[in-house]
Image 1 (spheres, rainbow, N blue to C red):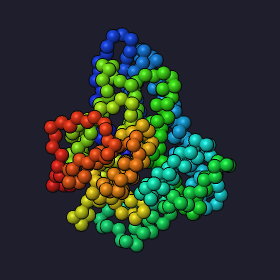
Image 2 (tube, rainbow, N blue to C red):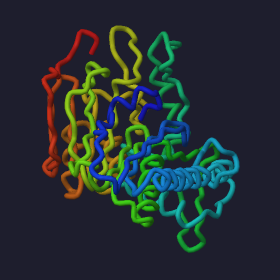
Image 3 (cartoon, helix red, strand yellow):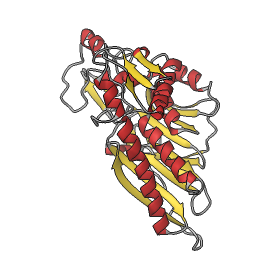
Image 4 (spheres, rainbow, N blue to C red):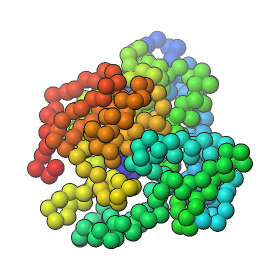
Length: 343
C-alpha cells in the first residue's frame, strides 16, 4: 500500500465525538511510526489513563519495527538480508513465525504475494521521471532475486536463510498490520474495552463508540480519491485496503499501477481497490495485496476458502463485487461510482 499521506482517506475514521456520562472518555493521537502514519483512538476511564494506554500501544509498534524493519541496519531482518547467500541468521521466534506466515500466504497465492519482493530492481518509477515503458528484458531482470521458495526457515534453531546473494525480504505489506494486531493485544490485555488502531489504512477496531454504536470506517471512491462513498460498520474486526489509484504513471496512452506482480514484474490491472475484513489485520492485508495481483476471479476463489474473511472489490469499470463470506454491514452514500476520463 502507498505510504502517501492521502491514504488516510481510504479509511477515514468517522469518529463521533459524543460523551455519555462521566465514566468514559475518548482520546485520539496521530504519530509517525514504521515510516507511515498511525492513528490511535482509545476509550478509557479518564484522559490521563487513555494517554498512558496510547503510549503503551506506541511502544509495542516501536518494538516490532526494531525487529522487522529492513531500513534499520541493526534489525533482525536487516541482518538476514545482509547475510543473503552466506549464512543463516538467528532471529526471535516471533520474527520466524511472522516470516513463516508470510511464506504461507505466498504458497496459497502461488507467489502473488511475496516478501522477497523487497529485492526488486525498481525500474518502474512513479515520481514523474519515467518516460518509457521498461523493456521485457529489463522487467525480467528486475525480478531475478524474487522467490519465496528461496527463503529457508529452520524452526529448530530459529534461523532464516536467503539462498541467493542479493535477496532481500521486507514486511512493508503485512508488517503494519501485524503491528496493529500486536498493539491491540497489548491494550486488550490492559482491559481497554474499545478503540481503533489505524496503521495507514490497516485498521483494527474493537468494542463500541461512546454512543454504543459500531465504529464507522469510510470507503474511498477510487475514481475520485477525495470522495468518501460509504462506510463499513465494524465492532470486533479488522479491515485493510489495497488500491492501485493512489500511485500510477501514464505512458504511451496507458495507466500503470504502482502495485507490481512479483511473479512477472508487470503492474496489475483490472482492479482499483480491494478491501478485506476479518479477525486479523496482518492476514487481511496479505489477502488484499494478493487479490490485487490475482484479479477478481482468482482472488474471490482464494478468499472463499477462508470463511473468517471477506472482501469488497471495486473494478476499473466501477463494479462492486463481494466475496461469498463478506457479511460486513456497509452504508453507501449518494456518490456515484463510475470511471472518469482519467481512469
